[in-house]
Length: 138
Image (cartoon, rainbow, N blue to C red; front, side):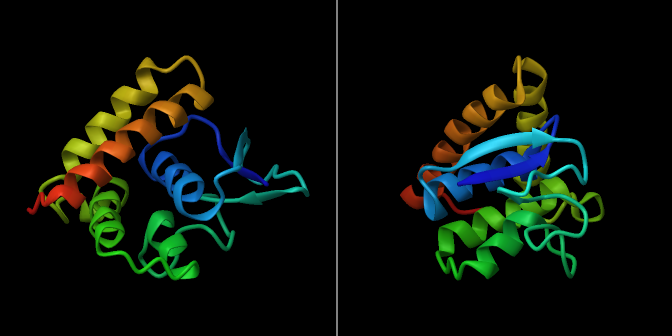
């Protein structure tokens, strides 16, 4: 299935792509579009006014967790971290959030394309998940 999001991906969009590919649709294909220019055959995420977008003070990652009933304590902790990295007012929500924001800024700046940023972001998220699963605690 195709999933569409805005160009120039950053923390929430990269983390959501990882969440989708790892826990929802291993065959996911991501396309990058201008805001509101979603092809009919794609599911939009992290865009204004879409089901898989910010809602009720939550970032898209948290909304997707809720919509898909992904009740994994590791994913919930990651959701808190991504929330703080993505929602400016909650930048200090977790100790990790500022560093995660910085890491994803670096991924975006050193990637030649959104596709490459998603690939690098997914590897980063695999590492984050593994570290928390191993027993990392704040």
